[in-house]
Length: 348
Image 1 (tube, helix red, strand yellow):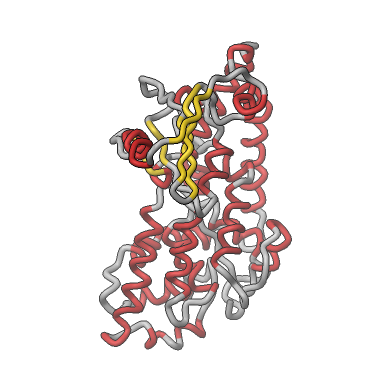
Image 2: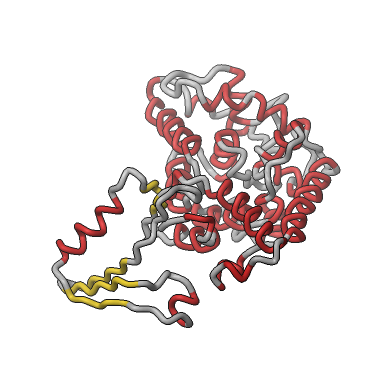
């Protein structure tokens, strides 16, 4: 798909990307020229191939309202493959996982708000005009961020301890996972003093021998590989994220609390902790399914998608340095709103 002129609705992109049977690439950028404009639809069942080529955009107006011209042909698969692959394999086609959707969404919102402010929506296609957000809606996102920030600052544990943990997270995430963990790395990994935030797991620490020594090399490397994949994510791609979560859950002793703690340390902008002290709060705020005992990768991804759809999460990056630091870790800091006990009092 193309995103030229900020016409393509990011909601549609998210919905397409959320389907496990769809592969999506973005051709060019919102400002690149020439505009990516082909309309090519190919359907195959068995050996039969039907191809549609014409003027119709994949929009509500294009499919149901406009006068369009489409040529329907039956052709050999190799003919249509050649035409499709000319675009699919182009150096201008970016895998959706590498597409900066958040930046596109924020800039698109600004562009369309300016169009509405200038009373020029008649120059947009009906579908685009309908999705254009006003300044009031943009301000609502900022207001949602302010409410979220105030909630964090007034939470039971505050966010100072969370910031302390996040400040040392690279020490654990970027370590050589082929080697045994140091005392400090174990403290960060299991939430021992003074790193209680994001889960307190002393019981797991008592089994640290399960992660140490040459006999547990494969376990450590599996953890390291999963965290490396999480760090490399440029966009929240649901199937890829679910695969990363499953990879960690497959490591013995990596249950919900440790798996999600490690993911939070790898990408605090994407992930949130699930443990015995937080799952009820996550149920209340975001409708999280199940408990920390029957934790599943698929339900966790749905929770993250819910969080990522909220106004405060989608708000533009703040200019203030402190707020920017919090914004860059905003998903992980949900824990401050849902954690039900003082840090360090008992196991998570």
